[in-house]
Amino acid sequence: MIGAEDRARRALTEAPADLLVERLAAELEGSYGITAVELLQVDYRLAALLPLSGGEPVSGPGHPAWRCFDHQEPIVVDRTGYLPVSMRGERRGVLRVTPVPGDPAALAELLGIATALGHELVTVNEGTDIYRTARRSRRLTLAAEMQWELLPGRSRVRPSFSLAGQLEPAYAVRGDSFDWSDDGSRLWLSTINGMGEGVVASVLTALATHALRNARRAGLALADQAALADQAVYALHRGEQHVSALLLELDLAGGELTVVDAGSPRLVLLRDGQVVEQPLEAQFPLGMFDGTDYREQHVTLRPGDRLFVLSDGVVDATGQHARYGETALERFLRRTGPMEPLDAVRSLIGDLRAFVAGDLIDDAVVVCLDWTGPRP
Image 1 (cartoon, rainbow, N blue to C red):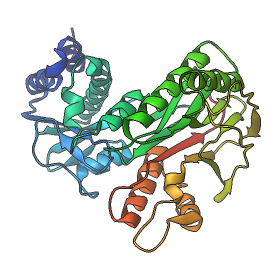
Image 2: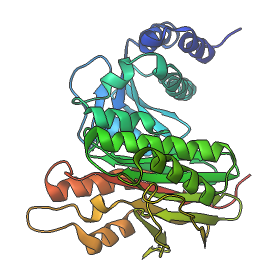
Image 3: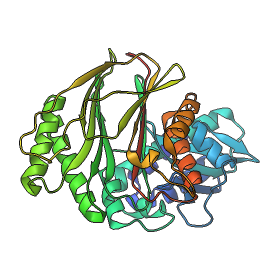
Image 4: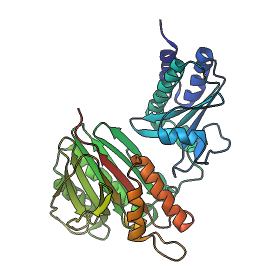
């Protein structure tokens, strides 16, 4: 006999792409007596939880929905439950259900159902705009639309690493982007910044991203990936346009980090509470010259090490009277030690917004990577 949790999962997999929450709500009412179901999706700025059906966004940091999102655990307040909607570390939002059954076993089943909803949201996203549209507190620029569509996700968790990144200004970012992939034994991470403004920068970043993916999927070494992307950009623009990039490859078993710096953002290591900027061999940006040969560097990580990749837009963020600067950045990065990578990224971006009293003017990318050590 099929149980209530399995019926809910089946309802999700059989639902039309635009009716996931409606079909799930009907199943939860019949199986658990839940009469109100709402999906709250996190917006592009990581600053608000937006109801799928419309209504007031949840932006207060002390709200139970945000506590659920931040801690990734169910929160129950006055018989209303808040359940994390996530998929392999990618936090999509929160499922709000009322009334919550008093049985702990039922709450555990609901938690599994919320996770299944996270997987289905990713699955159907290519076939409908409903969930993308509902995640926006305002319209994206065309350049920003292109950049967000390039991303593999905003966070990723595996036993040997945790990873998160964010683009700013989220609704108007132009050339800054990041990309990652892993195969269980290696992790590849790149941060990319196409020169120029608006759509021109986005198109350039998209070209470099796809060239790097093509080279990576062909099994090329990291330096050869850079060389192939360099050729692709140069062939189109003959040196008039170029792309700054930082390419990383991490051996998840041994912690050996391979690096290629092609005019990149900075790489910062947080180890034992100390912040150390990693010295990199500066090489030409992708596409600046014809036939550039790139060289790899190697850094050995220790279990528990945290890496930040930061673009110049972070340090150069300007408030009313001063730049954010190295000192403020180092102090803040030290404070992120106990945080999960997505929380660290979100906190740093929030601190930058507070410093400039609004959205950042220049593009900024922040990526945080924790290597926890070899895991089976």
